[in-house]
Every structure is written in C-alpha cells, then in structure tokens.
Amino acid sequence: MGHTHSHADSHGHHDHHHHQISSLNRAFIIGIVLNIGFVLAEFGAGFWFNSLGLLSDAGHNLSDVASLILAMLAFRLAKVSPTSKYTYGLKKSTVLVSLLNAVILLIAVGIILAESIEKFLHPQPVEGGAIAWVAGIGVLINGFTAWLFLKDKDKDLNVKGAYLHMAADALVSVGVVVSGIIIMHTGWYVIDPVIGIVIALVIVYSTWGLLRDSLRLSLDGVPVGTDLSEIEEVMTTVDGVESVHHLHVWAISTTETALTAHIVLSDLSRMEEIKEEIKHHLVHVGVQHATLEFELPTAPCHEGCGAVLSND
Image 1 (tube, one colour):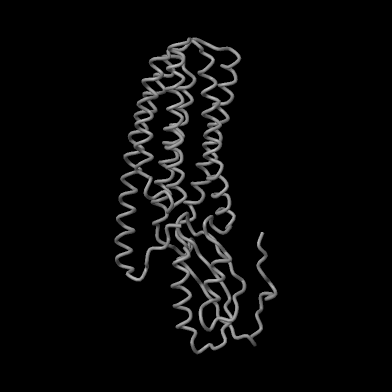
Image 2 (image 1 turned 90 degrees about the vertical axis):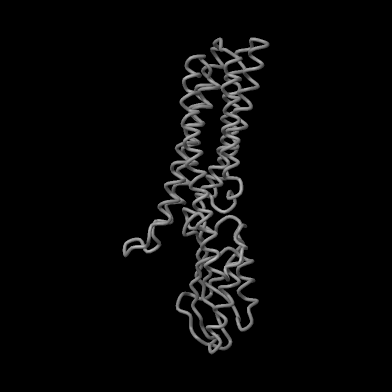
C-alpha cells in the first residue's frame, strides 16, 4: 500500500513528504521538457517519412505530455489551502485529473485505430531505417521518464498514471523500432499500420485500470488497495470497542483517504484513549483522516442503525 510508514514522528514525516513532493515535481518537469522535445521531433519525422507508426507514437507521446502537465497541475492544486467554499481545499482535483487522463488516452486510441485501419487497407511506402532510429531515441526517453516515477508510483494514482504512460510508451517505441527494421529488410509496408493497431491495444490495456480506479474514486468508492473488512477488524479489535457501524471510506485525493464511523463503546470514560488507539491503527491501514462518533450500547442511533455492510 505504501502507507505503512510510521506517523509517530510527524515532523520527520512532513520533511520526508516535502522531499518526496519536490523530487516528484522535478521528475514531472524533466519528463515534460524531454517529452515535448521528442514529440516535436517525432511528428516531424512521421510527416517527413510518411510513417503512421511514428505519427501514432508521437500522438501518444503528446497525450503523455498533456497527462504529465495535468498530473503536475493536480499536484499543485492538492496543496491549495481549504477555504469556506472548499473545506478540503482542491484535493479532489487529483482524482478528476486521473479520470481526464484516462479519457484523453482512450480518445488517442480511437484516432490511432481509425488511421491504422485506413493505412492497412491502402498501404503506402515508408522509410524503415529512419523510423527505427527515431523510435530508438523514444525508447530511451520514455524509459528514462518512467524510471523517474518508479519509486513513487504506488503512492499516488496520478504518479502511477504517469509511470504507466511512460512504460507503455517505451514498449510502444520498441514496437516501432522492430517495425522499422522489418520494413527496411523486407519492404512489408503493411507492418506500419499493424504496429499502429498493436500500439492502440497496448494503450487500452494499460489505461483500463487507471480509468476504473479513477472512476471509483470520483464516485467516492473505497480506494483500491484499501480493504473495508480489514479496517473494520482493526477498529473492533481495539479494547473497549463493542461494535462499529455507519462506516464510510472515500478518497479526499489520489493520496489521502478519509473515514467516518459510529463506534459503540462499553465505557465512555475511556473514549479519548480508545480514539487515539483507533486513529493510530487506521493510519497503518492507509486512512489518514478519521472522524469518529462514539455511542453507548444503550444509546439510540438516529441514522437507521440496522445498516450492516454487505460485501459486494
């Protein structure tokens, strides 16, 4: 999960968090600059050599630049202070951006598929050697950018999105290199649109998880990797807790998870001590923001207390 580091030393954690953000910020900026340069070169080469493989790869790389810029923007927005209108700040923008990213990629796929089918039906001669060289540079640039996000990819859905895009790109560029070499040696121009179609399928496959996870967070679903039954178990095993109900878990942003719950105690005099213990346990299962309401077994609960969680 990536949430298990101790929060006892909150100042140390804050420093670590700050360092992580600045290193990620640097990773975003390096990735954006490198990829913009490469996209321009690849579009130019694609038009010059009439290669759909290169053009579709450049289109995909362009959508990556957009996604990197969006992810970086979301990162900045997530740090905006809460106001009277937005009491959580703008943290949820990170979720909307990851959803938008997935949608942008799927639109790119539609365009690539349409072009590839057209070229498949009417193959045109392309310059294999040049394609292989340009795409070879792409392998290096995308591989390096993916590596920049490798260590933080499981901490945030947007970073994971950036990593997935870059890793898929590196693979896609490998495909274009192979097609260039095959065309150079055999003159099978039909390989160019075939690689275009394969690229499109790779993108759909790598984007599907991002789309599903970001949709789930947009609908205030339980974040992937957060186990509701584990959370309930962690809370009920605390000494003095009789039962837990009205348990709600949702994402404030792509990195922060919130929870509200009603907790029945056998003895309200230990409430503060039990609250601290529950919150400590929750941090270890990835919940940073918990709001808890305590009740005695005899107290009537006014929110329809029969509500039991069913495991869907």
